Image (cartoon, rainbow, N blue to C red):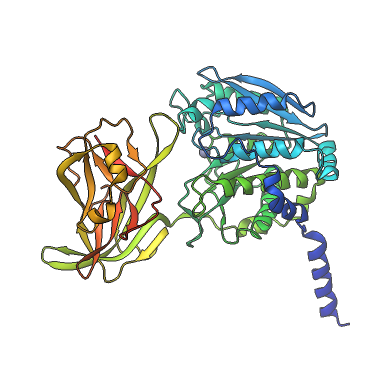
Length: 488
Ligand SMILES: [Zn+2]
């Protein structure tokens, strides 16, 4: 064997010996449903839901559940722990009230540890080497109204130094009492981020927060960097191209940066977007796997083998996605035809009864959007734009609207209807817009910020209607995914 071959073999052998096989993660991926907490099935679960689940946990003596303090509005914030090992791991979620994905996964993880049949050896190994502390829903007051900030309108993640909010104080007190080896700072990010300059959504983004403006890497941050490298490799098996890195600008007011500086290897996990998964149940599953994988790797110390260059190779988040891009539409302007793309985004709004989220669309961009992508992305070359119309011959009741043969109205260009009932809701789960005040102007406008309501025609026939940004093919029977708006 020549020297070159020997070296190659050594490299290969080391490569195999040093890389994780991720069998545990693979098995979790296929067995996830066994552990999924079924009482939580969308992002609108409430504080009362988790209180119920935590009181169940208290009955199981493998868990310790304590009240760490109270939110500004008096809701208890919990600290749950498991294990009796030396290495402490601290995970906290939802310091931003409208970022609930990881909280769901934490309850799946509690089910994983409660189960007495599966993965017994692995669990024994984890719990004899680590003690894991969980603080789910750090901002319960914000969560109650699905808002980022706490009830003082303060962003907790900018209050790590001043500690003026009770929630930030509680998080800092618990952190100081633990001084854990590893910390996991669990958030949701803009679902329109992509992993680098690609059309792939950043389903999960990581960051080992910096400790200063120079972005210096000390031994504490290096451990976070190595573990993220391993998680990146593991997740890339399931969602290749969909894992990214969050902006690494130093933010001295944030908890992640502060904790890293104080000596806990801290990992930011941002749950992003996934096509056709508005309630983020797939991203929740990814959180379940990546957090359990982290816990196992910390217990075994196996992440230490990972090269820090993997972390460096992870693409940064970029903003390349719209919710909808409709391309090459033709519009007659001042007597001549112009062609452009339309980028549409949805804003999520909590309904008045707080039981559902609905979406309100706006035109985000118009022009050449060839460097962007859309979750819905359709080429309308050869199609012409037209104005959506309001049918104002009569006022309908809500019951009549629900029974209306919409096809017969669409083909004449009508998408908006006058309603005589007094509606409290701001939306309707039907492909129509409702107007309760006949003075309201719903004229089609192709301008930035306008609510997108228009027609798409070919050969002078209306082929599609766009209602509150949702594209609806004009045919006799259809499925509608989305909501119209009620204009009061
Ligand atoms: Zn956040």
